[in-house]
Length: 232
Ligand SMILES: *Cc1c(COP(=O)(O)O)cnc(C)c1O
Image: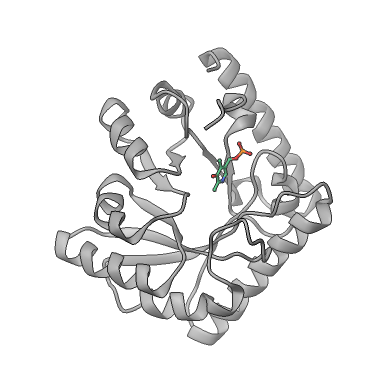
């Protein structure tokens, strides 16, 4: 785990990368937020993010967030970025403010019903496997309308946009295509449903420039801020 001074230097470096990427595509740096990914790191990682002035952290497991959150600054928002099994829907709604990984109509309906029962309001993203990667979660591009349709009736859930993870590849064109596909998917859904989906969560430590070039509004960054993760 890095020290707070190292973390600060890493944040500044990543913010500089984001600023350059925004400038290169004529975007305002304030149009992209940095979501620090604290998974596998001790709870201090979330405290570092808060101390630096970042408002949210990303975690990929419900249990891990439930353990860390009570020890962390209460003002932080917690965002689920990992696959959610439907039997953990209730715990996920309790542990997270934002769920970025809603990837099936069935999960969407279940989350909506339980959030209403519990009196909780949550922001959600539809996770789309826009890189068509068999190793990644997320609904297929063709399924995205059905997932969105299952979310929309639930007033407890506010759909703010889409999320994608690029396939692992040495070829940057693969990530770029994945991000462009997600943006096209979003544009199509906005037209078809007559709603706004302003958020595109895409880009990580290794590919955030490509994601910004394709319109990312949220880059999820772990290793570039906290160093390498221990093997899981
Ligand atoms: C772990 C993870 C990240 C962060 O990855 P880095 O390469 O460490 O920046 C981003 N998004 C998701 C969904 C993750 O699981």
